[in-house]
Length: 219
Image 1 (cartoon, rainbow, N blue to C red):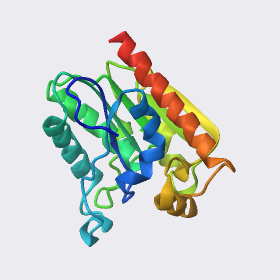
Image 2 (image 1 turned 60 degrees about the vertical axis):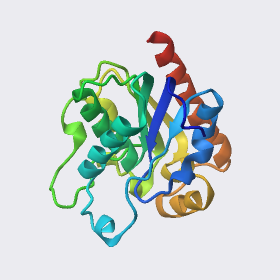
Image 3 (image 1 turned 90 degrees about the horizontal axis):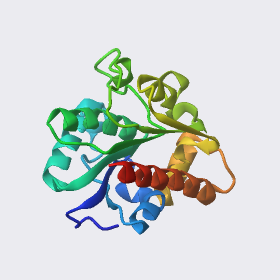
Image 4 (image 1 turned 45 degrees about the vertical axis):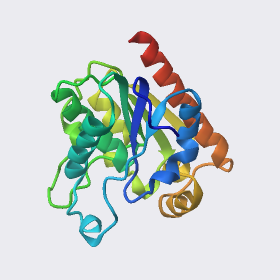
């Protein structure tokens, strides 16, 4: 996946909690094949500080916005995305980037999970309306299990952005979009929903490609 283009479509995709960037290579390769420049930054290392919640999702969103400012050219058509906690990071970062005056062409939240700051009783980004000028894409895994419980899952994100495109895969598990060893661990921890995981992952990728194509054509 290339990261050296100075124009065209750029997707900055944020991984789930302590998931390595390489775990999304199979999910994102179809986008790169269509000419999208894909960044999957690692914004933290899984240190005890991070594992104890002292690097909150709010902290990560600020780092994400700073990453965009430093690494994505201004003339690029910017898309933000992420999976699980990374989906929430992208959601928060989009608001920060827009507030800075930079346009965002689209937002892709793949089975996003809200909350996650143990120091704050309720710190949900979906408690406030998204109020986005574009249509965000919210992808949900119907068999998300304990990693994306019902009281903080994709449904909340779609509800906070009534103009969103909300696509739910009935036989998808929360960890099925992750590949390699990280995917094996994610499916063990979070559950899986399908027998043919590569096919299901490819279907998610196809929805993401179509979304970026449509958003780019409209801009």
